[in-house]
Length: 81
Length: 154
Image (cartoon, rainbow over the protein chains, first blue to last red):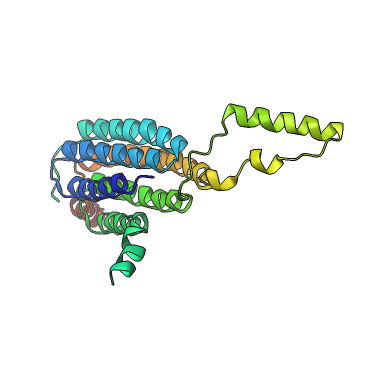
């Protein structure tokens, strides 16, 4: 584990989490949440958990983002908060 | 002060961020009005718990928990020598040292947690679509108002 990478990724992780919860456009929130999943996948590859990183890349950044975007297209895009 | 700061914050930064992300997710689940925002908060909460567990399995100077091919061969040769009755002289030198590999047990447990998390998210989003079909909105207060109005009519 390279601690410089670790700290940079963790800070970006908190930033993306806050952005995805504060942005009012739900499609943008879904995309930023996909970025969050990809960042945490990088973090796990760095920490030596390669099996968890593979699963997060396919399931977290892939399937979760796709089903979130599908739900946004089937419902509505704007949010009150 | 400087040493204490390094020992408490820099060396355990993963755990600090895990708690911060957990509280962000909990806050979103409680206070957000939109159902999809609540679900994003739930996913952030889940990844924070997974981050906590995977961080607990990290060791300093350890590599990924996969044995290399030649390590297994060396062990087989040594086992053969042992059967023939020769004293195993340098068994310690070729033995697999668990300190060289990060702990794989939290990884396996959290692999299950990721799959359960995405299944939860999928079912919750399906329920959200049904709610939108019945009430025409994703905002919690509007849904509650419509439920209350329907109860008063009936």
